[in-house]
Length: 322
Image (cartoon, rainbow, N blue to C red):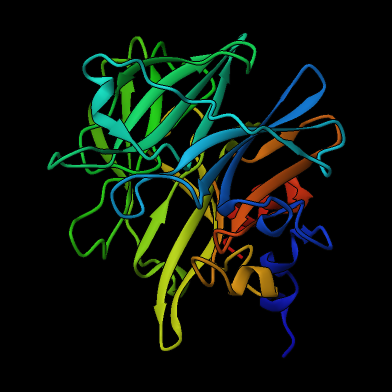
């Protein structure tokens, strides 16, 4: 076909690194490795990785932990053997477990981490646990900052009109057949209110079941947010990746979104694993100097992939709805 409508293709804006930057097969004793969050600290790429050991003990699959992987070049990562997010044995933190799918937001010299955490016993979950670190050697839990069931809460990197904002991802249960994006605000990162809906799932075929946010990236045209979208197909559930653009001063307003997905599971390591057919971002990293967006993503819960693209082109794709 020809015509202006088909000259641009958002599915071509991200380019995969030729192979996974991490794969579970390279780490004996690890059963699952997935869904990373990445920031730069002291000229080093710091990745928070969701990990499940074969030796882990717990109820069902709720035995995940967070480990740190470090890299000088963003490609070759060294994975720690230690669990980074550890809870003191005091209320309310002794109720929590399964520390995976972190979102990181750097505000000044502190990195704030929101972790969707399952609760022990019969408590409703997951909830969003807020913690912080300045050096990625020590971690301090702060507070639970979402009501259940909320998965994937992501904080904006600066105040807007005097308030902090976060994107929330509430969803129903037990079917978990819907998930949408909301927004809330806070004066201090702990007390949150003024909850408002932002975007409902199902605006395109690749997100008919669920959508979910990552920490927003500031651009001169709006807040760029890389999202995941879930669709139920005749061949099973697929996790896609897309993007939306939010107003700089009124971030609850969607001013653009990609019509197509940016990525879908295509490679063998994305199609087959512990969670088939999945590409799942948690915290992309933007290099403003080179106009490059680094999207590290979980691939089928067995590998970490990397895709890069021009930050400005993805923003324009949102505004043009391609």
